Length: 157
Picture 1 (cartoon, rainbow, N blue to C red):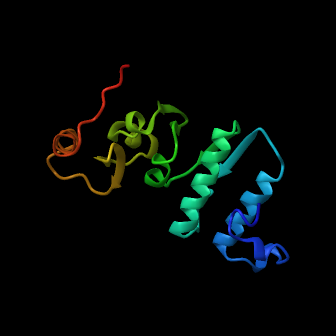
Picture 2 (tube, one colour):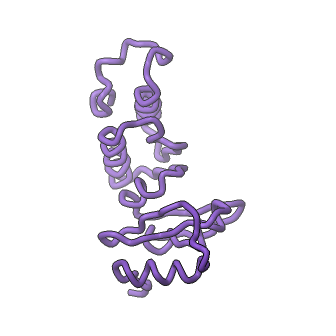
Picture 3 (spheres, one colour):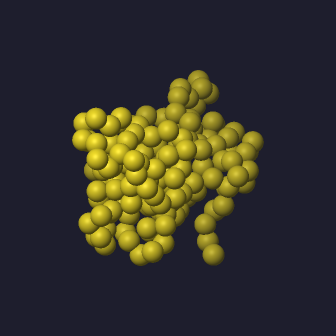
């Protein structure tokens, strides 16, 4: 498992002697060694470089495809949206649940995080952009983004 996570040479080092990213991978390896049916992870890619984050996301997707339930909490919306089939936005209650393209909307994100966010669409995937909403209003910006980007699927069959 350590080799698969790119830290095979660190198995004999104390956890406190590892970098933040190495510690994240070590915690993930430890969790995977339990042979559980469900894997609960809080910010599993925090502190990882882009290459390692990509590898961890692919490993988690492999685990999911093999039948393990993988539940992740994250603020890395864009990184995970491309790798997850289902997203749930929570803020005391469920604000949205389903495929990222349907759930990651400005309305759901503002209800979840309490701050306006823009959503662009690139290559069929939502891209969340947090930042100030222009003075002409949130509703107008949402329409502009969808008019200037790829068409957004409306659900259905």
